[in-house]
Structures are given as structure tokens and as C-alpha cells.
Length: 212
Image (cartoon, rainbow, N blue to C red; front, side, top):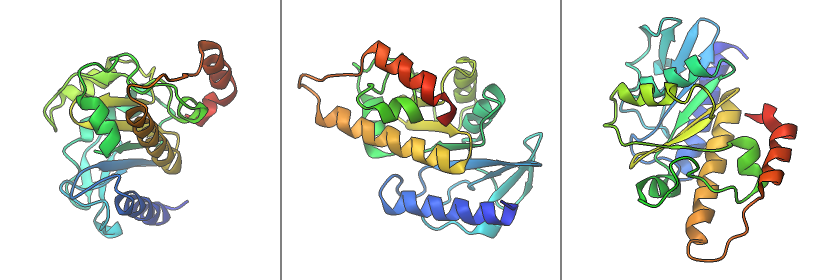
């Protein structure tokens, strides 16, 4: 896929997320790796109305070299690329149910998204909850680096999910799966829930690890 095609793909997938309510207003940001650096949605842009020609471009040293100014959350993205070498894209959303879970005080910080379905295990894996940090603060990147690449996604407390994938479509699909699982967790709150067993999770990871 050429860089122009990738820009158009980023516009299409961003619009799809916006149209289905995974982002509102100017919330959320997405990046994708290209041979000479990264493309990133601009700061204060709306995922539903991106202009392919104005998407930010950063070089291999993360210098802004083209398009509009990149998202202020560049630190979140950079941390995933630097600690998970196979990362090809990163999606940060303020999707409703995942963000709602990030606001609860009884969520397990080591495993914030319960293994309710095989698909969240296959596409997302275990999701830690990171402490609250002001948006745009580089400390958020430090917290992700502290995980040493062990997780493909995190929940930022009182903020929302950040999800990485091997390519743009994989990252978007994983972000969607995380949101749907968060919705299930909220719908099932207070009821007896049958989670996947550790043996089920190990078997899924062994077979489908490449999906992340």
C-alpha cells in the first residue's frame, strides 16, 4: 500500500469509528507506521472529517515534517512503537464503555478488561489500567514504556483506551473489540459471569498470538 493509499485508508477507518460513536468531537487519535516515519491524525482534528493531505507526517526521529501539527498524545503512540517492534499502528479512543470502565474504582489494574469472549483474548489480550495522567503529558508514554512491551493495549484511568496492532486495520479492529467487551462487562455487572478459564486463555494465546 502506498503512502497516499494509507492516508485514504486512515481517513476511511477514522470516519467509520466516528460514525459509529467510537469517538466524538475532536476526541481520539490514530497513527500508522510508514517506511520513513509515521502518519498521525492532527491535534484537535475530528476523526469523522479528516483531510488526507493534512494528516501529520513525522520522520523516524519523531520530528514533525509535514501536514498539520500532530496530536498532543504523540507520547502514547511513540511508547508502543518503541517497546513493541512489530507495531504498525496505534489507536487511542474515548469510546464510551471502555472509558466508563477506566473511571471505576474497583477495576483490576492488572486486568481491566475481563476475558469474556475468545475474541478479546485473541485480538487484544490482557489490558492493564494505568494511573491518571493529564492528557498530553509525556508521563503517559513513560507509563506505557514501563510495561516493556508486554501488552498490546492499555486503559488510561479516567481517559480511555490505547490499542496497538501490527497494521492499521488490526489496530482498529482490536480497539473495536475492546470497546465491545467493555460494553459486555457493564451490561453483565452484578450478575454471575462465566469468564474464560486460564487454560482457555493459554490455548487461545498459543494459537492466535500473531493476531496482536
